[in-house]
Amino acid sequence: MDRNELRTLLAAVAAGEAGVDEAVGRIAALPSTGFRDLGFARVDAHRGVRTGDPEVVYGAGKTPEQVVAILRALVGARPALVTRASAETVAAVTDEWPDAHVDGGCVAVGALPRPRGTVTVVTAGTSDLPVADEAAFVARVFGAGVERVTDVGVAGIHRLLAAQSQLDAADCLVVVAGMEGALPSAVGGLVGVPVVAVPTSVGYGASFEGLAALLAMLNSCAPGVAVCNIDNGFGAGVFASRVARRASAAREASA
Image (tube, rainbow, N blue to C red; front, top):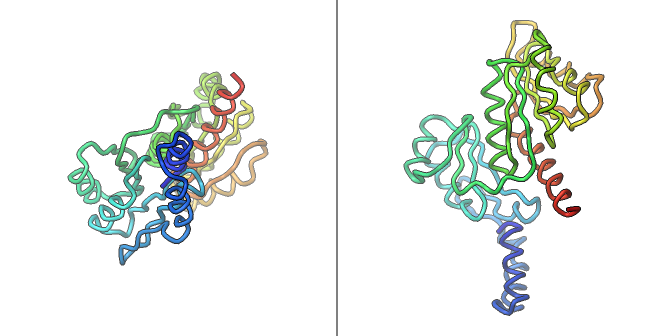
C-alpha cells in the first residue's frame, strides 16, 4: 500500500463504501504485514506509506529470476523500478511485462505517474550520459517532468550560458560531471535553483575514478549545491523529483 491507496481507502470510508472496522484493520496491520518474505528478500511493501515512494530494486548482484519475483511483489498503483539492470534482467522483465519502460540501465513496470514539476538534468560531456540517463529516468518514474541539457561542460562555458534560461525555469537541477567536476559550481553561480551534483567516474588517472570530482563538488563555493555519491544517478533522481513534486504542489495550492 502507498499513500494514494491509503487515501483511496479513507475516501471510501468517508463515502460509506467501506466500513470503519475494515479500514482500521488494514491500517493497523500495516507495520507488521508491510513486507513480503520471498526467502531471499523481504520486500518492503510499507515504504510507500512511510515516504510516499515505493521500494526500488537494485538489480546488480541479483539474478533475473530474483528481480522478477521482487517486482511481482511490488507492482501496484505506482511503477515498480529496477536500477542497474543487466541486459539479461531487462529481457526477463520485458518478457514478463512487455509494456515495461526501459532507459538508462533501468526498467520500470506500470504506468508512469502524471508529471509534476520539472527536473532538468545537465551533463558536462557525452561520457557522463549513462549516469545522467539513470537520473532522468528515475526522476520521471518518481513523478517529475524531465528536461535535458547535454554537453555543456566548462571547457566550453559559452554552451552553458546559452542554456541559462532553461536552467532557471526548472524546480531542481541534477548536474552530472566527471573529470574535475567543476560544472555544478558554475551552474550554482548562474541560477538560484536547487542543484544536486553527481560526480561520475569519468576522467584520466588523477580523477581517481570520480574522487576528484566528488571532492570538488563537496568544496563548491556556489551556495545551494548538494552532492550525491559517485555515479549515483538514482539518488539524485529521487531527491530532485521530490523537490519538483513539492514545488508543483505548492504552486497548485496557491493558484
